[in-house]
Amino acid sequence: ALAQLTGMQRLARAFTNNSDGVLQELSDIAVQLCGAESAGISLETFGPEGQQLFQWVAISGVYSPFLNATVPYHWMPCGVCLDRSQPQTLRVPVAHFAAMGLEELPPPITDGILIPWHVGSSRGTIWVLAHGRTDAFDHMDYNLMQMFSDFAAMAVRNQQQQKKILQQTRAAAAADMANGLAHQINNPLQKLTNSIFLADTQSGDASGHIKQASDDLQQLSSLVRQLLAL
Image (spheres, rainbow, N blue to C red):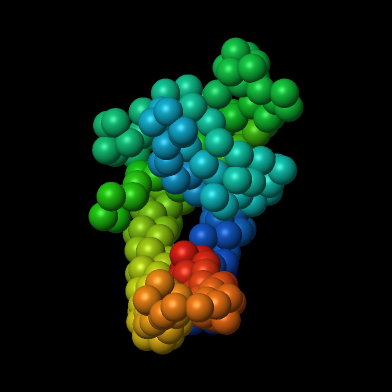
């Protein structure tokens, strides 16, 4: 009970102080409280051709070297878990990973708990694994993982909301800058128009007006480039 309380305090601090690190902290706590050799969180994503993939966005323990790796959706138990929308127990031999053509083969999974989570259009799984023991996890571990799946969904939603706010803030700043540049563009544009008109209508040497038009055009071009960079 004390270990669980300490884990919850760590998780609460992660939510408060570092939202970007919540998923990894959640994975670390799962390893500790469930006595797992590995734990992690998978996020469904899509490849350049629209193919379904899983990205391991948080990993602790033996599988840590595979952080941020992507794997085919239908080759992993995570896909079965999401398709069925219910928790799964799992065991995966090394031969399964070898058939995937991975350059570096992970250790076999001799026991594991896999819990689905979803929030909005995002979904994935959270899991704890053993790599040598069978029957490594019990009903208490299952209950903990069910709770952690809700935390994972909440963390992903929080990250999505922060990203949206940041994008809105950047968009508002860009709109303000674009509006200011648009007003700045009006002045050299008006001068350029006047210079061209004078060069075209006045008799005699028009080189002065042409030089002024060239300067105005360069200033205008510079402002347009700034606007396009937004």
